[in-house]
Amino acid sequence: MRRVSVRRSPVHGKGLFAIQQLRAGERVLEYKGELTSWRNALRRHRRHGVAGHTFLFGLSDGRVIDGSRGGNSARWINHACTPNCEAVEDGGRIFIDALDTIAAGQELFIDYLLTVGDLLDEDVRRQYACQCRAASCRGSMIASVASVE
Image (cartoon, rainbow, N blue to C red; front, side, top):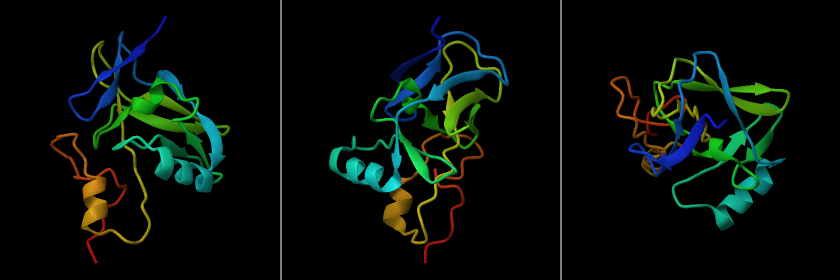
């Protein structure tokens, strides 16, 4: 029985929503896609990427899961500064686990905690602006927002 579905999100584009209640601590689904190098994934993303979407999930060993190739509905999970889910790496795989009880119909979110390198200018800030509207929103999907140089 399916527990999540993809539909239009009020936060950004498509989102992932609970079909039934999900319990805190529950493993919801795996983030699937082609396992590749960052170099290959970024080259393909620049060439064939969907505007406003990045389906790349980095692993601790330096590889990346490219959800745009063979991915599943997990690729549509949106960012929020106060997420109700978290991404957990286990054996070279990424799983989405519920942090809180999530009611049926509620959208699932993770904190992307993106890293973008050393140069954080206004264009980069704009590209990774957060739209979660949470009271504690940091205004960015980037892990730690440094001041503009």
